[in-house]
Image (tube, rainbow, N blue to C red; front, side):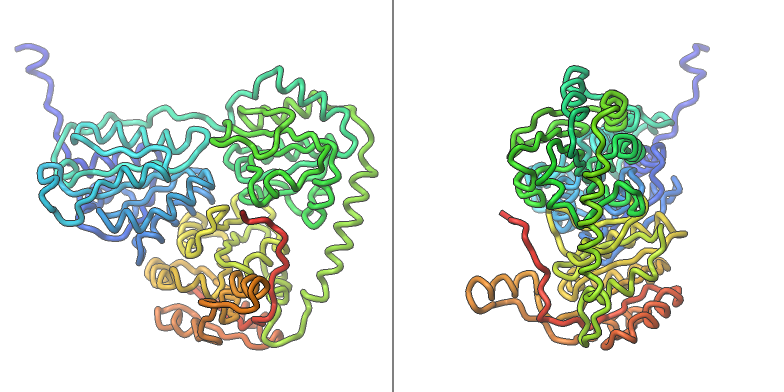
Length: 552
């Protein structure tokens, strides 16, 4: 008998099992989803491969949970959305992930290929409208292609610049059988170990940095995805450079580090002779480059060149591994001028501005000033509390005063600014980091997008504590429109609505706070409840966050 005849035949498995097997091979243990018939074989595969399903009340929340998982773990988050409206409901999260460079993989259901064009349930070609908000968008043509497409999507999500990848699976292809995939993970890029940027460019940057008397660092989300926090701390410590952070970079230098600053950012960036801009675009948050002084030499650092040109010309651009690039700058630019006077000047300004906040942090008005809410929260947040922002004015105050001490402990929607992301992020954070507190900060407007996800938290026993600033208006729109036109429209919500009662009826813990002295006890009860909780704080609708950013 021939050797071929003696070899045992491989038992074939259905396409959903193949999907799950490739996810499991790369360490994916959670799949965020909302039940849909097009996904049943994937669910069956997940059950066989030991992947837990975390089911939400809206596909948007499932996709945001995938992004939340990526943000808190720096590993690809994965969600499965059923065909048609399931996929379209997840598009805002895909777009946000693209702008945040969040590595997620979206698995879509799809009408069967054998009936394509005949009017199957939820039949639509997702790829043309998903492609602009993803790095990669593919459809499985055969069951045998599935394993390779899953590996390809995971790789695409991680390769710099990281971001979302999409695959959809025709119902017939994912239910049909093929040979099981080869075991073991595919080869993906090792982001922390990527080589440094071009040596000549580094030499030009070293020359600028070595002679800088007033350097400054502005670091953002790309620093976090590039695993650059330790190299950044070494650089700022040895070269005595003040550091400012936004996005996911918050926590990459702890706020008790001597080179960390936040309140003095405007003065530091305008006064800097050299600015290192690490993993952050010069978008509206940096005045499209106008946040820096006219004579500031800007050195841009990232893992990959941006898709669009910089709105302001950079003196040097460094693209490569962020840890290696920062270490090369540190070792080459030592022995520069004494920068203690520059740091002291900024520290004096920083302390002055923090002192100016004390009155608002202790404001005794009722309804409460948003800053009083954060004054109380500052007393209960641990160093490893994961803080999530989902709102306009209320969360803008949080971005200003809430301190984050570790990487991966701050999440907000990012530059896409999609409200409703918070509950999905919180679900993922509580699943990924059950030993850490998860604190969700949200406005009453934002609650309307995804408030029923408190049911998801209850069903999955996720003790997320949410604190709401409830001012009964869309403050981010009402105050500017009244400033421009003298009136506002479509900016009113029901005042003093009992959102806490909604959470109670969903099985969680609810608190209403009307006076400042009642807030701390309510927070303590919420964190002690062991349940998903909402502390509904009535805040003063006349308070508007003082904005300077040019949004357009």
